[in-house]
Length: 276
Length: 261
Ligand SMILES: Nc1ncnc2c1ncn2[C@@H]1O[C@H](COP(=O)(O)OP(=O)(O)OP(=O)(O)O)[C@@H](O)[C@H]1O
Ligand SMILES: [Mg+2]
Image (cartoon, rainbow over all chains, first blue to last red; front, side, top):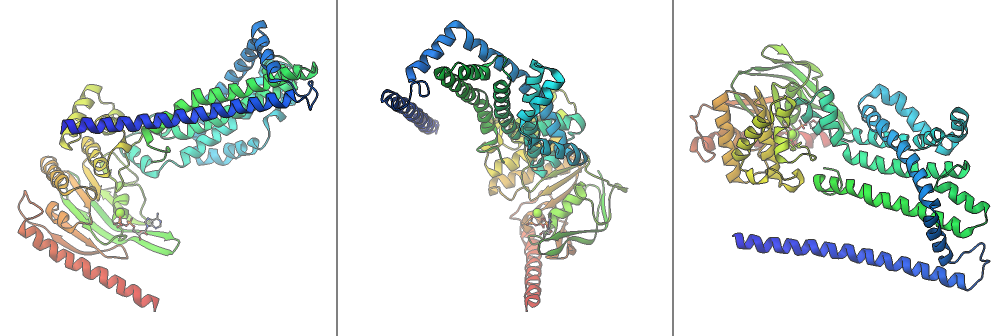
């Protein structure tokens, strides 16, 4: 019996490894594809169909990145952007998650504040910039305001929708198990809406990132968006592309590092797709 | 040790296919310490009855009285074992079982001891740290039973709790529920499709009409304990109830046929 079980768990391990193999094959394919893409870029650039000023060589872009990293301008720009982003996005999470939980539970609040949030979501966040500058001047606060307006609504509304789709059965069970008042919010509503919270946080992050880049492009201060704008002003196409690549990389990395972690947490507990 | 009384309770659902009576002018008195089993065709209003006694849904008409007092919503003196398990996916098996104790502010050590004892009762000690989605349907129902028993409610409302179990496990849990009932004299309202199960467990079996949400007939079960599903007497009474049930289903479908014509 125990030997059989051991054999079986060996088989399960093999199956697990096979899954790992598939994941690695996927990664290799992706890597190969991007190498191919860069090679094509290289070829197109060496054919010199377009002027070098408007179509830079991959090597020039790589040099721009290396140079920027060495002289410290790029790390400084990244740092400035990330600071703004983390502040603004952090505030959005702190307000958005509790607000979403409340909106999902309180009908009157949802009919009023909820519909306001839906309305505001239709406004691209960069439209808040003129107002923010009038209110806060050319400051970090103005930038953060734009980020918050960009991400707060989507976080709030995702969490709200998540709360509304919690199965009635859980809510009833919570009631007879004695989870009332704050305990209900902390021990039932919050964990039950975790899948929605992670979806909302992810959505909010991408909105925050887009808002920040738009704000930095329009209002030159510091940061990676401003680096991009500076490249344009200096007619330095290599720098422009370098900044764009950095923006993509940062976006992808955060998605991989932070949100994949959250999603696999949900996957482990809920089973497959976060719905029971 | 608590009595339950339903007085003239009605509940109508306005569904896509017109109004449906979950319950209509339903009268039922359950004395304290009674073990009442409800049987009836699918869709006859058994879950509706439990939901109303639990306080999840208010009746459209009539009152539910617990110890003579009208209920206004759910309360911790009544616990429901739902037809679907309703366990929390974000907690593991033992965390699910001890959740109610945690809400009641009971110390961690006592929580753990009582949970461990109940895990042994439902034969799931090896799965105390498993996630809910890793369990089979029958295992989930056993966790749900443990979660209900740990709450030690005065009234236990059970909606087809053992439908998904194999016969050995079911026999074992019948004994367990019977034991708990004998020891604590809880008032139990137990819904089931299985007529023999109803006779084996109940002090009274109530057969509902197929439609209209009413009581068709009641059967007092005065057999000695402990009973077994295979007892001759149990089988005899069960087959009589089953005949009545079959006739009722037939009558209802005939009626439906006439409506179509
Ligand atoms: N929310 C609802 N909306 C509309 N109709 C409903 C609703 N809930 C129950 N009903 C109807 O009320 C009737 C009784 O339902 P109920 O769930 O109480 O049946 P049941 O006896 O528990 O059936 P089963 O044995 O299949 O669980 C059914 O005809 C059902 O269609
Ligand atoms: Mg039912």
